Image 1 (cartoon, one colour):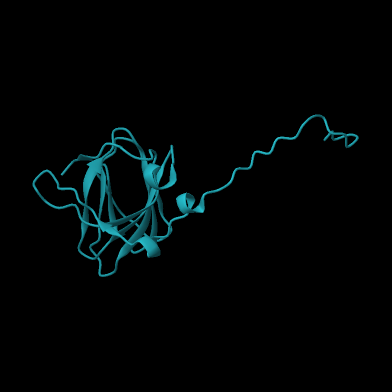
Image 2: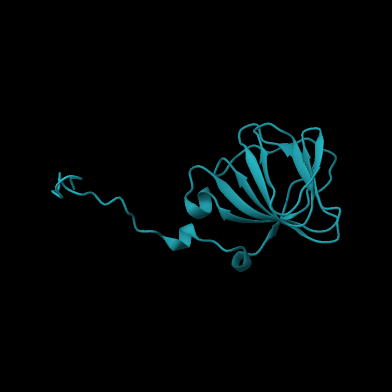
Amino acid sequence: MSAVDGRTDGPRTDSRRTADLAKLVHNVHEQGFQELDRVGLSGQRDQGLVSTLISRDLSDSDDLCISWGRILPGQRHLCHHHPDASEFYVVISGTPLVFLGDQEYRAKPGDGIYIPRGLTHGARNDTDTPVDLVVGVSKPADWEFVHDE
């Protein structure tokens, strides 16, 4: 419509699409967690749990992957890097020790942690309470995972 006189200036196009909720909505409490399945450079197991919520396979995403991560007391998510994708953590609960390059950071609930492409990173839960975090990667799938330990 014209801002001046209310006339229609041409045909209206509707940009709304039908949403497939089965593809767009996933719940961690309904689908549960899977154990990480990678092995480090010296044969040590990568530890932690993950529940993928948004990805190419689940959501037809073409630009990101989002998961809920859980690190139980005493577990360590081994240091690694992604040469082809950036990542982030948002700490929901717990206070993990996060490794970023040659730095260690005691994270706390509410922290948003950006991990640039190529930066070595990992986390350890050296406390008595589980750590929950939202984890995002800038590719929907097939990013490289290179162990640094």
